Length: 207
Image 1 (tube, one colour):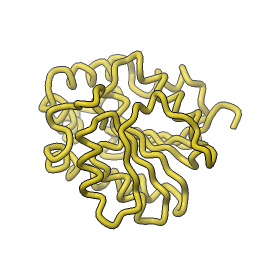
Image 2: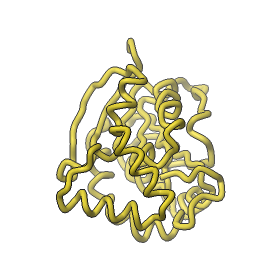
Image 3: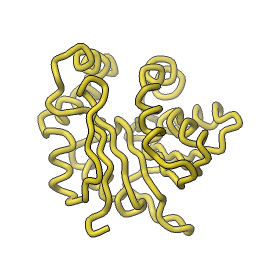
């Protein structure tokens, strides 16, 4: 997940890796299992780089981008033998690489963190630099089951500003409102994690 300034949030880096990353193993495996091996991948709002490293295991060329310098420092220091590369950057300002559009861009549990006015432009930018975009984010309204209560508690524990963004995401009906705005083609639409996470694969309009 991305902070909105290069300083990032207090929990970026080691704290995030120790607490949140451990809860997302299943999500990372799901994403990796639904992307072909060998693709060029942009991992937008890559956080600590855990998903980037997982995707690189299957022969993909992965670039992770996050606005939080703390996250990127952590990602680089824990890259090990992974071929994933990381850089600080604002995903709303990305350009198409010289090699052409990425095969796919992933953005996992990051859109809901952003101010409302940034969510649409970020998704538009990803659709401009990649042939497909896989989005994973919270279902809205959030189910009131065990997984839903866990998600609410996690968002609240991250701080009031974070929880306020989550509440706004819920009030704006999450990905549904963004889809209407972008007009992107929906290639697949699923829910996972006891119906609390929505997974969309999108293509640019007319692709």
